[in-house]
Length: 135
Image: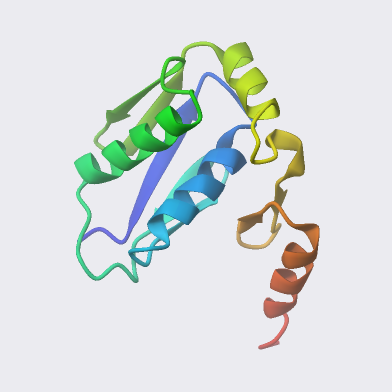
């Protein structure tokens, strides 16, 4: 089983953090998590007990986009290398995310070391300390 899956976001820079955060929330119940890595999202499945197929991950991503009303402006497809989210209308996506009750684009904080994402600055500060525990 492949332990990581890459999700490329095409057509709209800067929305990776929002999608990765909510993917992590959804994957947390099965032991997976998502983080931003070099302008794409990497999904870590190393702790998942029951393997997830690319189709299942695609369905999860589509349901996440639908929950925020983004499915009308994005297409999700399974590629040879992972998944692709093609944003058809970047302005519409950005407007939806800015108006989201979950905080929107401006209120997500990302760890510069590993890509961990949280909407809480204090939680990020505590998380960053973990990188220095074993030095």
